[in-house]
Image: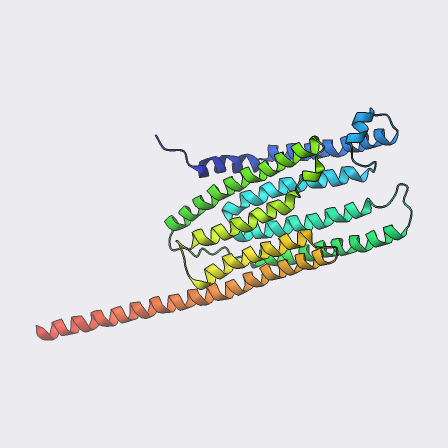
Amino acid sequence: MAFFRPHMLFDRIEAVLEEAVFRRLVSLFLVFIFLGTLLIVELKRQQLLPASVQNFIPGASHLLAIDLCFGLLLIYEGIGLIVGLARSVSESVGKQIEIFSLILLRRSFKEFAHFSEPLRWSLEASVSVGHMLADAAGALVIFLLLSVYYRAQKHQSYLGDNKAQGEFIEYKKAIALLLLLGYFGVGIYNSFLWVSQREDRLGPFFEVFYTMLIFVDILLVLISLQFSSTYHVAFRASGFAVATVFLRIALVAPPYVNAALGVGATLYALGLTMAYRSFFVGAGHASRQDDSHGATSQARENTTVGSDQNENR
């Protein structure tokens, strides 16, 4: 009987997540949460809820529905990021940047919550508009840069053979599975604190998640050394970890700075990809030249040996 391996469980989870039925259920769930939150907020505004329930609901703005659904959507996208880690590290980094751009858009909606209902212009609202413009513009620039980033990916394997490639993928699936457990662990713990109304101990979910991603990136760099220790491979893997560090800092940076750091991290990942492609093609060309030179030398040697044998005859 074959022993159970982590990648087998990961493959089953990935198959479920990629099913159309699962995506449809997620969409229906988000729609239900959105409409239900709008209804509950309106009941609170009309004071039709029990006092205990009214105190449990934060705020009385309908924008709470947008914030909550965006948060749940980001959690779902985070799961997709973890699953994508096993397929391609470069795609995983792109997914990290995607999630950060959605976080910027979510913060734009949160700034909109500073407006009172009905909408009135005020000094606080003018400050919020500036923050909204910066976050939205940063998200748009990142969105445009990501289209270039994904087109620049060639997905060339730097491992020696298919066996090494398969072994490295199994390592990545095992790490992704552990990361998925940690991801849900942080989410469950934060949910427990929120339900028990201990928000003072509530940790920032995505800040913790991106910190975990930094350690995962470094771990993948160390594991990849047993398959390839060439300079351009080590630099690429380490560089992607640096991009994650920039995104982690951007999550706690003040307005304007966070968008600039996010754009900078995207530009860095794009530049790293272009430089790696240039280095990889150059190294591959040199390797082919070496192989061709070796084959030519071997042919010449065989010709010389054959001539010597004919002379001896």
